[in-house]
Amino acid sequence: MIFTHIKYDEKTSERVLHRYLYCIEKLGATEWKSNFKGDFSQIFLEIEKELDTKMRSNPFFNKFKKEF
Image (cartoon, rainbow, N blue to C red; front, side, top):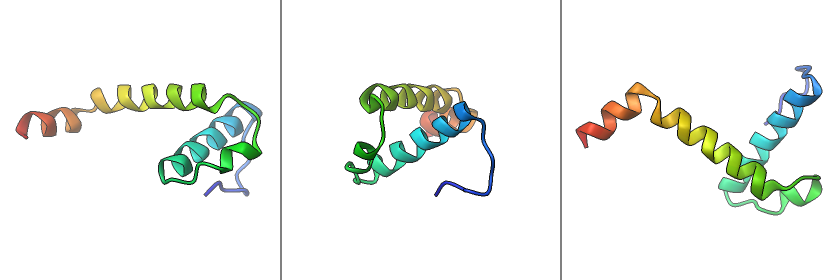
């Protein structure tokens, strides 16, 4: 859930909204993004790439991957 009592600048606020919509979409609620403007297929692809990069650079993930 987006914390409404926290003040974000416009760019950060947009990123938070995109991440929130991305998570909601992953949970199966795909209709929410239609209430907002944006090319969400492109935005979600960028989020996927960012998360994949973070995951692959995580030492815990790499250790876990090697053990199994």
